[in-house]
Image (tube, rainbow, N blue to C red):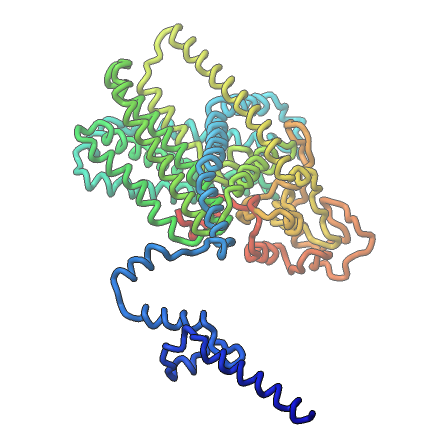
Length: 595
């Protein structure tokens, strides 16, 4: 029985082995090489090779032979998946959308800045003469016996009279400059010389604008600062002479620019005009491939606004001179119109291309132009306050580098030489034209003020208009520098705003209480005698808010940084980095400007 049970399983195994030997395996004919046996891609299953791995190995061996058809087939059928790098392609798409938004956002800023410059320019022709007349009337009607120790005129009235005197003197000096002789002198030069001259004039105009506003500010402050002795007022005379010569030279410079542009318009082959327009595209090469920060782009935007407005005034002067030569024929205006449109179109195209690529290379969003617009609007609202630190036209000059006095003197000179005013009818036409300019100025100011309030509210900057001025520290001696800082907000007040960088010489107007635009009341300012005397326990200008006296009379209370005197405090402010657009003006880092 045991033998029978032991032989039955062995018979079954023999029959199974015979059946397996009869079956023909499809890979038995394939020679087994060492490569197949050692290949790590082949997977073994119960001692046998995987059929798919074997076929794949054979296919790779066949494909190892070079074949042009196989290469072309692979190039035509290979694929890739963009979603594997989704973040990269999404960023590229956003850059394209940003470049498409740049023209619209840039032109919004340019239009707003253009009307700001127009408002400051019209102010010189409309409201400034009226303010000068009111100041002179106030000066003549004051009884000399009741003056006492008070001022004869308010600081704003003194500045208005100085501006009026500069305008009158420069206009009388411009009569000795012959525009026709200058035009023919420039026309006799070669095209290359004129191209070089025009480039030199552009550079000189920027340098004059950079230094000219400092000259005017120095004159205004020298004329209005409190003086201990009457003989100190003599220092106004050299400053006034310097300001007159600056405005006169700058007006001549702009006249040469207008004459060169007039020669380009009147040339037969228009080669000079083409070269001058191509000069604008050279500006792209010098700007787009350099690194720009947010503040640098703000400065360049302000410079572009100023240059565009100046170009429009130069085109107006060229048209006036040409229309005068052709007896004001309307047909000649249509001859000049294509060239005018070509110059304006080239200016707009260069600005759009330049800003589009600068924002692309420096990864700046298009929303930054709305911040720039809000900063300009904040300046406008701040200068409309009752105790504003500066006039609005001076604020525009500091911010954009646009000084309206030389341009206004030249325009008056050109208009008076082009138009003959004789008889009562002509005088009535001039009066109506003046009233129209006043109406335009008032309407422009109202619209700008309303738009500025909207922009400031959108940027959440209206709280800065209600900030109170900083109180003087106990034991702090009033110095000449502390007198000028009455409208200067502390360094920490604007830290919450991501855009600020104004020149240290430019006072900040963010700490002004809101009020109507009325004449400010005179404030009692201490004499400089207190600088040499022992420091009192409290400030003579503002009462101390802290009941505890400062142990060191030369050290202000926290959070201000300690400073030994007013001069050192000013130097420390000069060294502090500026991160706010509200403190950026045209000349803050003029040496590093890249436009």
